Image (tube, rainbow, N blue to C red; front, side):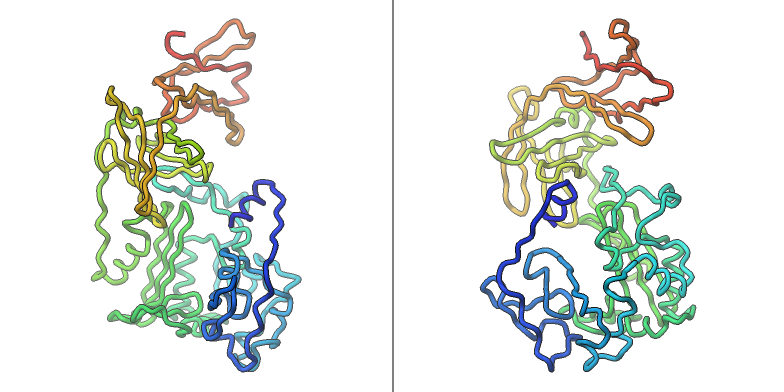
Length: 430
């Protein structure tokens, strides 16, 4: 993942493999069982590779999912004909001619009459896509890119319900046999009553067994469950990120099985805008991370220097202690006060470890950004600044006021068709 992000940022990346490739599996071992029955030497340790159904195991070898199929992996019958029925090893497409969008349409979307499902959205579809949020922070649309071949899709509740109708037998298609195959148990999870089929969790320790799957990105969360016995299906889509309290899975399971309780969500404390504005700014330590706290929609947000461009919503426990309710990690920020009862430092606690960061004195800066056909202008940082005035001029001599703003407002949008000249931010008293 680190190499992928660096490449996206314009770096030229060379991945160097260390050591020899894992040996091929024994000829008499069914790959359908996965890699759990054979151990390999990886970085000097004996390990079971977990990724895929044959040697490779990018997750175990590299610590990241580097899926690199070989052309022969797509040669029908080369490895699997002795162990699996043809419908499971006969790949429908050659390795060198994969158009995943066209293949998806031909093999799945058209047979099921799904009209609004795709891998990459077209320009005409973009306005209909719901903006995703992580708390109060808007997230950019998730790009499928390398996840397309893995089955990542953009869809609608209507199409997913149509898909569910085929899963529970209310509709029929040429894929009925494939669906029945996908519903059969392939592996246990270690949790009684929950097994894994092909792309499905199979839940059987309930009065009415069902199949389900859920997923999430930084700004969206989805859930689909099907009960073939009762001919019932539930689809839950949300343009909000899952958190430590709940997700669409919690809601969907409650709809499908009312006995499954909804999560109890802790309500944030009430904190005044004055207290939030006092915290606003940067906190840093020598040769360490920098935390930038902002305010959006009357909530505190944080951006950490090791993940630039990604902001998280902080929820107040008190006026000086804030919690990050992220599903993947647990963290909190505790602010200390100086002699004037103003925030002077911040202690970041994550996974039981804590580090202290001092508040930084920052000069005021004007930020310009391009959003579609408009340019936005906003003053950022500046200790002790609460409000400022945007002014406009055509000759640098005569300045006219355009708007009076605060540091915590959304930026001023400038229409290029009506606004010409120069702009500046003027602080009170100047």
